[in-house]
Image (cartoon, rainbow over the protein chains, first blue to last red):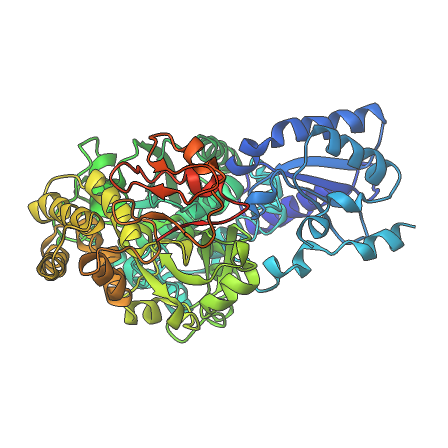
Length: 124
Length: 504
């Protein structure tokens, strides 16, 4: 139970830290998958599973994978966004399980974003 | 190495689609996990509720909303602060807050996206509204066709109760507030506020006459404040950051932003949130990325079956409530359907009228019978059987229905017809007088013809015609028998190399 502003602020600090830092205090890479009805219909669920599974297989640490709501670009679903601490967010579009696994291997494990799958490659 | 790569990848917020957008109602959509109250708290969630309950009087909350200039995002555009004030001024043993999430316009999905992406923000806003108006219970009326939204709302309500943001004595202020979800069964009329409340009460979803207004006698006969999802989505930010923050955005009389579900003949379909006052041209050409296939823009339909259309001549109109009303259109809840030169405006009007005929609840005769008669007249026009007198009658009946229907559904049902008649009268006249559809869409009026100059007598068209309407000898001119032709277009598709067949 949160009963006053001080407790709410304390909780906020704690939640924000949980979103951005690991238990050991290291900055977290954040992976979000657009999973509103639109994303799910376009196949976001297998994409989400593939990301989690590949991260596990490669034993990568300091990464949080989470679902999120509609990112806004219907025809490019499923959309995955990766924010590595200190770097610009990268938006991947029209993902599937294979592409997602490749992104985990190249971007998350080796630090090289897969330019071909990004929104800028898809729209320009 | 990473440095080199990232420079080649353009970030999303620098793309044309996002550059002109300003995300306020959608600020957390696509950012946080909607099923985690902790992530909502991490991005200032429930701070506005804490601020109001521990430091503001209910009348202060209403004053902030009034000063912000927030108006109803469901389409009507009624000032939200004033609405809250009306309920607050009525004393009763019980008052209610209702969230209208019965999003029924064809092509609209703004509310669904907010509920699925940021459900806690609606919970927080409804509690704020309850505090401001003296209500201790709230209902969210959401379509059963939105299972993901319903599930996430249920999770959000359970989490909020666990954390003490719903329930008794919230933030030890003495304020109690509880929330319930009610599922709608898909009747469009239940998006009308009085029909929605009748449906929550467990009765058949039919509107009731106003006055008495919901602020006096609403849900279960008690004073009730009803707002749309997007309206509520703006509330926590306004309370937290102050009225000035919100009032700084938008135009003189329409503050803040508006979310649109952009669809139809446009390159970038999707959910866009723009400051009020953005022009239609900016939405279509910059955010939307223009029209596919190099076609010309003809009109944009706003407000779905209750709205009108904005023709190309008014493409530079800054979009806000009053400008759209002034041109005989309507903001509506946010569906924005783009049409190009291939869309027949009479056909579009008929599409929306077919919808309202289906969805009219039948309680009042102007809407029940009137819309049906309008539909029949439109059918006559589309079939080329109408006279100029029918056009006059159509317009007269449209005005009659607007003035005499019981609720918003009937009062706005003729809008698509009136708006297209206002801006595209020439298309109606072409159908009636020349028996011709200028966009070559209305099947009864169009013809497929073979150009004698171009036909090489290859027989391809005759072979694909499913009704043997095309005759001609090899290497000689072919002819289409208009009596037999069913206008399927197979011949035109088959003749794509020579392009001797055209649709007129």
